[in-house]
Image 1 (cartoon, helix red, strand yellow):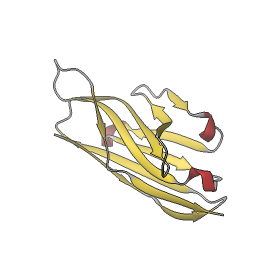
Image 2 (cartoon, one colour):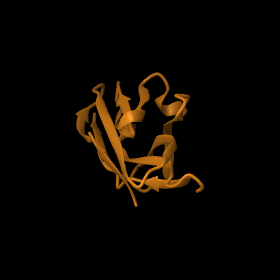
Image 3 (cartoon, one colour):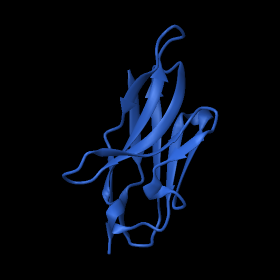
Length: 121
């Protein structure tokens, strides 16, 4: 019913930048927060950043000062600009969205399939 499609991952050298995008489509009445999580090999999925529909942002300490999350409400899209990347940023990055599919429904979490980010030293 709701699909999240990420793009923008890839291989980059330490100190470089990447911009991730995630577009939500399908049966969508409204979206509350959209955000990013990441999962490094052998580790749990961790919070990276989130942005509410009102533009309030929140970041994990690991990304503060280096990552910037933004949204295009009209396109149901969220972005993550990542600068000064470090090898420890290497992970699969997952998009998350809190979506309500009809006016009387609850917000439910939806996830993308992930995009790989590899930062070489």
